[in-house]
Length: 463
Ligand SMILES: Cc1cc2nc3c(=O)[nH]c(=O)nc-3n(C[C@H](O)[C@H](O)[C@H](O)COP(=O)(O)OP(=O)(O)OC[C@H]3O[C@@H](n4cnc5c(N)ncnc54)[C@H](O)[C@@H]3O)c2cc1C
Image 1: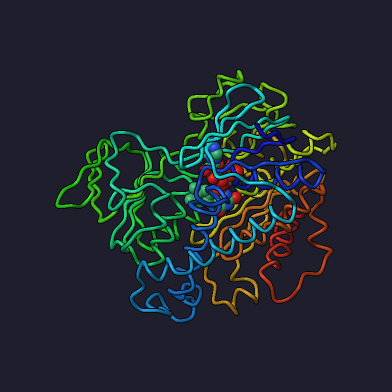
Image 2 (image 1 turned 30 degrees about the vertical axis):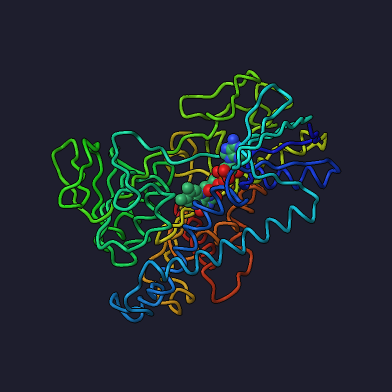
């Protein structure tokens, strides 16, 4: 039996960051990964593939130039699935290469095997060839992530009805697409395919979607999506999905039928904890296979077993998973860590992208705080003119009494990068005056911060 100070199950963002951190603290570390290559959902089926697809689509369609040259403008005519896949594979190979190098540099051992506990300190690791090894660990991190929820009544066939893992490997671009589930993943894919001029219907059982985003932003976003012809069907559950003439037809409970060439079912994910035999170490999971942890230390019910990343639920982002993994490893090996800052950014890589940090206007109202908002449109900035932007907005919210920044909400080009200025000011407890007093590079979209702050300042002055 081999023995390690730290055994990490899963090589996604949480596992990767935790393993490297523990190794840097001088521990022997083993990462167990059951997938063919290291990197997790983030590298192989989630974050990086979908963002590569998005970037490829925006480049090949000439999306960013359409403000100048019109909606019919295209850099490449006849974009096919092979065009999208070529760049995807290059990017993923590069990501895996960087990760393997990082493990090697830090003497992190990896084993391609599926892990299951046989007691609180021992793992049984089974390789693809069926060989079994027993591994003893002093401390563990469960970072097994999630997989798409595949209800038995949905006729998945990997070709016409797919989950989000399958979506990145499609052999042919559809002319029409139904996306069931208007969560982050569904909205990203719906808008990316719409940018390819695929006719898209977005179906969501609830009456609203992306409810954690400031509603003024969502209104602007929905307006842009409808303007592009995306059919948004809210407030009706899916009654059934069946094939008619080889095409998936979605019947909603209100009787409406939505036909398309392809259907992406993106309604939720479940934790990969079912095969870990957690009963052997007395750890329980919720109905979606998610683990409960101490939010400051990431310890499970067993103090020497930590869990991080999507396997513990909200917010289920690669960015936050990495930080959780690092905090867990530091705690496990006695390096005191301050708690993570209160506000982290949320990035939705739809077309257009959305990013947000801090409180929404709805949350500020619910707290009963006196506040004022400031709005900037990207078309008010010189950089926006240069880029031909007709859309894009930033909203900032400030407390009236203290002038403290409470939240920043952006929809439009560069939102996921721009947000970090707001995040820094927010977590450093800055005020409206930071934006008024400081000089910003010109011409940049970041100038929107000054414009929105001045707008809020004017409104405050008017009382
Ligand atoms: C389509 C899509 C787009 C996304 N876009 C973004 C984005 O833009 N930004 C962002 O921040 N986040 C994004 N996410 C979320 C992000 O991918 C996840 O938050 C992140 O991958 C979670 O990391 P993790 O370390 O918890 O686990 P994962 O990345 O899920 O990795 C878990 C690993 O554990 C392995 N494993 C599971 N069970 C076992 C076992 N028993 N033994 C050994 N190995 C095992 C799996 O094979 C897998 O490799 C996206 C997700 C999806 C699906």
